[in-house]
Image (cartoon, rainbow, N blue to C red):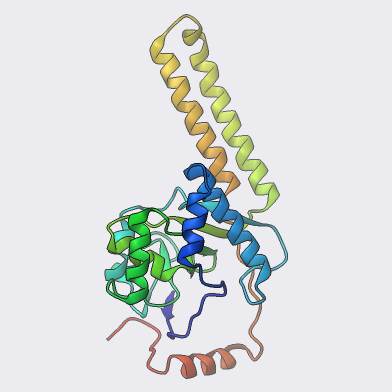
Length: 258
């Protein structure tokens, strides 16, 4: 999938002031409360905007990156994020910028930019709000909906930014089937280990604790799984799309460079 950024993207959400960032941190009893506060705040903001990405249907707002993401991809992002590039639908391949989990909708600001410097101070104070990412299944990637400069600030401070992920909810039939498979697998493993654990086998007890933690994580992954993003035909079809592309990215050549 080839893409071109036009430089015109603006977040649909209002800016978050430093005072608001500090207020949320100071009034949160712990990190869990802090993350829950921001998740709820993004919910309210998304429902209030008129030009956001949400449409009628079931949505999820989940804290943190999905389990399939690769933490090491964050710090290489600024070096592999051209304004015109390529992303792959399945796995990672060539060119090198395919090795990413997110696609910013505008170029990340330099580390020395005034707004980034302000956010870097918030990173050091531990109050920086999370970025808001949006899962688009047709691109098989997370887009940065809000928080480009917050991401730049976190990376400049050599840390991974906090994020909230907006995604269409998966279909209930798929989710129920995935849950049943996970439960059956867990029950089978538990049944095999329980007799030894009942007789005091410490290794069996440790294995039960491990598979129980894994079981909880798998159910959480299903609950926050990304569903399919809906799309609608562009009036005018292919000709209208080509006209818009020519107007917004006149130097863009779709396909490999050279």
